[in-house]
Length: 532
Image (tube, rainbow, N blue to C red):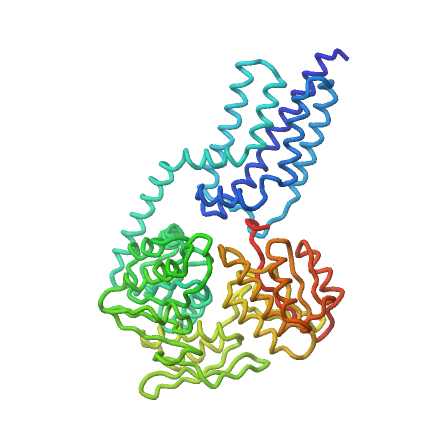
């Protein structure tokens, strides 16, 4: 075959394949942008610290690009090798599975289509200017390798569009809420515990009122707006709003929309320090909810956390609660008994008030979250018998100290949704009370703790060493801190019972080898794709 003809065929095939390959590449980058809340600065910080730039697929893309730029070798050969490299990369991407896969919302579609327009536009422009298939193919490969830049540019170009859309949605949600002046709105925030408390409160209040809560993790301003526009009905009587925050001002923004009359702060702890930097910033942000309450409002505050207990609140009714730090708490928990069918405990209140409760839930954190929900329900006039019934029937929230038993007789404690210093310690405490067999923990450690990440993971290792029989440490992200923390407490866990693996699949293989009937396994945290 004529070398020039072969040259053209290989270049054309490689160019077309690359333009197809760039679609799953951009989808993966968009998935990571979505996990970083569509914020370019957060995505850039993640990219620079996660090792994404040296991901095998990106390195292989660079090799393919290098091959077509080598002029002293026949392009028919180098182009063909590059072609198969791109095929391999594409197959690998298409087979990949993610903990938090891309959700193709309308915004995601807009970003993806804009990014593809940029890629195909630049590639077509190169062809019309040069009529050189190798140069055009090279531009396509450069754009594939530099796909994060393409996604960031597409997101930046769409900022005015997104702002206009968000403003329209915001105004629609505001008008809907204004049309329901009798709607009782309850805000829930906290470094942790807010999602569980939301579910528990919704279940209890639904015994008395037509109640709506923000679904799933709809705890941003746009998530609340979507809930109001798509789910809120004129006959709803109570609206429970979970309020999350990544930076100061996030909760105030939600409060400026919904105007809550009751606010619950479940915790102020060292979580998301990567963005908040200091515990003081966390406290100020969480208390934006309390500061937004009207003069006749109610603040329900968890005094078990020092940065909740030491925050003075004036101008509203304040009801503090605690399981441990009971000195200044109006409501306390007592007579706590853990049993095979759950937990028995008593909520003690002012003027000799007492209500005895039973729940299927386990763990001190769940007692605390239930207390906040019970206090709010009492304030809204829910009868005690309905509260008791609701608490009895509450189901465990998925991946939050959710206990299951396998057909093989192994107890699974699923606390995989998230992990934080206080929550992980409580989860290990729950595991320690399971004395029927071996106690096994599977964890990659804790994330988003900024400069204190190593410190807190080392402390978690210390706590594991004194309460657990086997530790399976997953991944490299916190491996060193966890293992060193375990070994600092000499003699409690033999070295042979510390297992380090690269993935959860490998962790399951180790578990299958060491676990037997009667054992208890705690899954503590499961890193999102952002940190893998």
